[in-house]
Length: 573
Ligand code: ARG
Image (cartoon, rainbow, N blue to C red; front, side, top):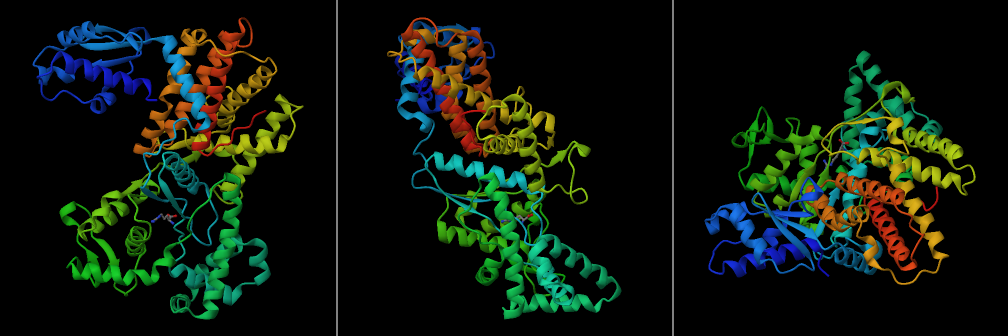
């Protein structure tokens, strides 16, 4: 079944065509559909079509067009129409709209909004992409959660997705770290304290190198050994990597995040040469102060550095090789790089260089950029300086959620499990609640406010629906009478629900999980409004059955929406 808005678009296009069969340049149903707007005041209609879009092909004034279209409208079973200031305003037939929306929901269940439009297409997603020997800090939360959510969204739309953790596991700093470990490190210490011990070694290396500059050479020599695959150097380096990933795995588990590939920078060491050769063959590599660069002055960008004057490659070189490898291996239609806005220039350069190399697939590379997270300072204790460790944040969130549960629902079973779902959900919700490019100010009182726009609020609404459905199951209700859903509150809720598939598509198009966060919040609010205004289980059983079905629809869409942003939906809280 097609959704209401698609039907309205088709019927409006058809009506225009029948009125003006000769006119050229009338919009097709597909073109007309995105033009349908939602009027700011529901009293003006459920949808409105701006007729000025026909003024040119018809050479008529918009109000005249609106009047003619409305007079010719013959689909009162779908919607009645009214011309308003050059708009054709549609008022849905409420009972039919409820019946149709509910039929579709009952058929699709939690797959409502899923589609196969992505079948045969592949999306690579580069997200989280943490650095070896560094703690997983709060700066990596957004890339992890935006990427994870986009992966779920594209999966839901039928795409094949490849989640890639492009590890930062290459660079001279690793030579220094191995060098420091050889000099001062203790195996048990690194085993016990992991990354903290590695960081200390690195800090010590720099302090000592101040006094003894020869140390720098030693560090470089160790990096050279790593490059040359020297067994001893490699063993230590691999072990550092393992320790880092084991640490990160704990955080990924807590967040429910996973990857299909951990091919990081070091994976591309032997894959750079062909790319450098291709650049050379295409005459794109020029010398600049001893270094090899691609000139991007025509694009108003600084040159893209490919080989440094000491002959070594850099981050950008590896990204070029990675893009090529991903295309050759996965044949992606899109490759999304979920990386903070600080790397805007880097990705503009990389994508431009790929274009200059003549790769048509470069057009499918997209930098999904995002803003920063900050905290309300003192409220968050940190273990180290002012970098907030993600694991600390998540643990605190769970602890705080646990306290709230203790107070609100002391008799709840499996409190620990629910506290985990709520605490983690609160953090993820905050992270995905705004347009991704905006900076985020994380505040506990907001994140864990059960009454505000928050993860717990939406989860609580879901649990409320579940509890209502448990009660309804005992009532043995007959088939629903959809005419019970013609009131304003039910209709607002139905409208939001029926738009949900559009929201998912738009979130994918704009790489914007926050649109789904917004949608589930709106649906939760609309449901709660409905819940307060109507006695769902009382009265005529067939009408009660319709209200229960609506609650089930809200439950299912909220659950799906939360899933798409990476949040769990407890059934009791
Ligand atoms: N490791 C980098 C960082 O933490 C992010 C890597 C992003 N991905 C990429 N292909 N460059 O800043």
